[in-house]
Length: 457
Image (spheres, rainbow, N blue to C red):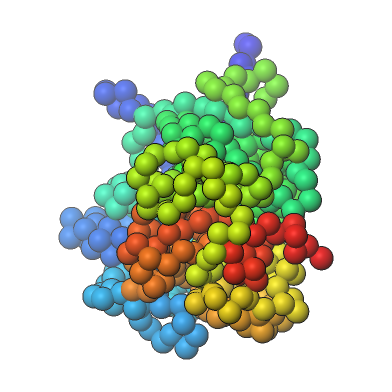
């Protein structure tokens, strides 16, 4: 019998396919469920109220990350008004359900999409869901991982399966080699600027090509993270020897790495995708967003293009205006996009021996996990940041979005290593420019949006 070539996604899909409903939807087995305090209590309490237990507590994890206070010595709380109930109720519900909880001051606490790979919870070929749109980050390890709602999380915990319509497939191939000073964040913003925020709608996007294979695992996570800004269902990258080496010794990863299934997790020669995009990596420059959508991004050396009138009005920039040199008021390095140890190292390299401009009102570094924080402190990176004028924080989502009770000054212009620059995303009237950690660091030094290549050692 002839077996037709399959994409990486198709192999995972068929390996987890349980059945099909009368209406045509597919039932897919779920290997891992991750919850956080914004929605975790609702899903767990609803499940308990229905009289249904968590089917397999060993496969379910919860963490405090979205609204926790990230100030050093934070204790057990949040700056969000009324937010303490989210924390206390998630804690109680997690203990009652018997699932693993990474509490506020647990040594393993951190942002979901940072600690799951750190601990080996996400694995090649696995299915993983979480009530967070950036769950696609974890596809960097060759997993089928996507964001869901609270009711779907409840269903997955009770039954071990979820109902899905089969998504379309897309391959985005980055050929060639990135130029010095260009990062995975720039790759993602270039894709969005070129093909639009809706370019991946309804698709599982497989990132491939020489430039992707050359990325380390943390860089691959950054690239996959922003697939949701591309409107993709999720993203995935074929695991390789670098992936397997990354997972060795992780607490929840298997001790033996000879699983024959892992060796099959590549797209077969001759497999077809519903859509293909090819990008020459050498053409990508450091990118910065200019408007109110991640697709409003441009090379830092370019001038602002003509876009929606509302975007120009909100961000306060006109078409034809040079973006580099635009004064900024604040800088933020953090989030599930760019707050891993490699991100902090690269930003610190630019900041070492330098200081942020006196016009910067607020500059924060929020590590993606407690483990990242400890590792950075062991290398002295915290001192590099504080000597440069940044505030060093505990881990959490923090100012990625305005939900933790903290914001910049209303109307401030900030440059941020986060993933979204929507109106009010970081607080009322805040004008956000998203970029790589290096660009954030360079801009903080300059007091204006700046090309990180000008500050390279």
